[in-house]
Amino acid sequence: MESDRKRIGVVGAGTMGSGIALSALYSGFDVVLQDAFEDAITKGEKYIDSFLEKKGKQKLKSRLTLTKKMGALSDCEIVIEAAIEDLQVKQKLFLELEKVCSTDAILASNTSTLSVTAIAAACQHPNRIAGMHFFNPAPVLPLVEIVRAAQTSQETIERLVSLTTDLGKTPVEVSDSPGFIVNRVARPYYGEALRILGEGGGTVEQIDRIVEQGGSFRMGPFRLMDLIGIDINAGAMRSMYEQTFGEPRYRPHPLQMQKLAQGALGRKTGQGFYSYEDDSKQATHERITESVQAEGDVWFSEGNWAPSLEESLRSKGYATHKIGASQKPAAVFVREGRNEDVLVEVQSILESAPEGVPIFVQTADVALSEYLERGLDERIIGFDGLFVTDEFISLQSHEWISEKVKENAENWLTQSGLKFEWLSESPALVLPRIVAQLVNEACFALQDGVADKETIDTAMKLGVNYPLGPFEWGAKLGYEKVLAILDHLHSEYHEERYRASYLLRNWVRTEVTKR
Image 1 (tube, rainbow, N blue to C red):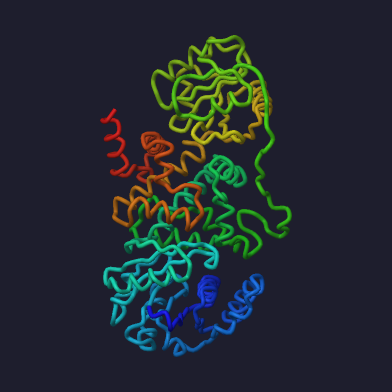
Image 2: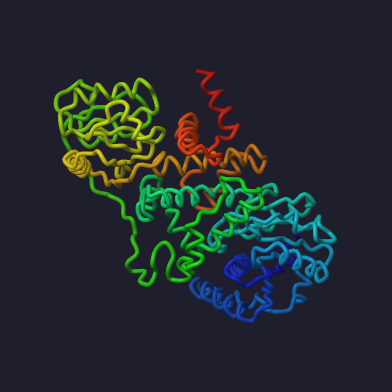
């Protein structure tokens, strides 16, 4: 693109289109923002004015043209469509743009889930059609997915990559497949949270707190759905499900449909999974910052499913020992995963541990109720060892637990400076289930040739602010553990939704063989 002529067109003055226009204004472009509806133009102008005023950049407004006329886009080098997610609407718009714009203009769609190839198929010159997917809020988030349709020319891709760089953003090139990278890989973040909620495995508030405090995600899935708009999020899920001919990993959840029927769409309607009638009352999920010094003994079994817990407790003043190596422990942790020897070991622990001492068993890949067959009694508590931090731990309760043991556990955890959440029994708790599915979906995307590992990780961190990319999560947790969680979910539900990708299973086989 020639540096002496910078004129960008945007079709659609909604939040996304106005945000794209604002990003272009910030970067020194002349912008034509077109919408057929006067009300949309008025709202878009207010949105842009508010941002420019906050930044003290009101002078940039002189570079903006607001119009209802499609013909005003005729001298734009690149036009970005940001209309509603409807294939027929977009195809019609692109046919009109072809008539209005010059033959060397690039036409890009900001679609988040629809097929760019299908949009281009309706055009006379499909080689100049591509996807240019921004993320909301567009003036803030740095990622842009550049989507290559089957007909897109290399020149078109290069010009869009150049434009993205000129906008001060990070381009990632991706093949045209449902959801591209971010909307595809992020599906389990919402879908698994909804299933856990629907099954009674945790409340909205609990799931969000666990994800934020245990996994360091900036926003839990329900707070994020409310921010995005439940209608937008549900629409993306439905589109993915339909485009993949009913792939169970993308199946919409009835709880979202109920919210749609209710008109409770999140922040924009004042009610979603949370109420926003008084934002001052919204939970902030504060973290513990005080230091803790404690004394006493804690027993630990062998294993690495809670790799940081022993070191954390030592730093707080506890002495840690192998099972049975000291007198009167304050707590016992069985931190190995599904293992016949471990299940047998629990029986001996029950015999050697003093009465009233809580016995925590790792339940990311084994059901708490399975310990019934091994002498489960009132002292056993499930816990998530993979995502325990210096400040937070997730626990699983059951109907047999002694109130005295539960009280002892809570007192000891409080003394240790650990905030905790009690969950009902459900497979793989919260974070192991969500993160394992995120890793698995990324493996499917890599297997399908959507993008490479580094691009997928970059997209998820920049597009939705994940603390780690899915492959970084997989490497940190260990792919063998991820596979164990998925196989546990599959054995519990017997659903194809939880089948592990061939690529993931093959990686694990290869790693095991190398040992």
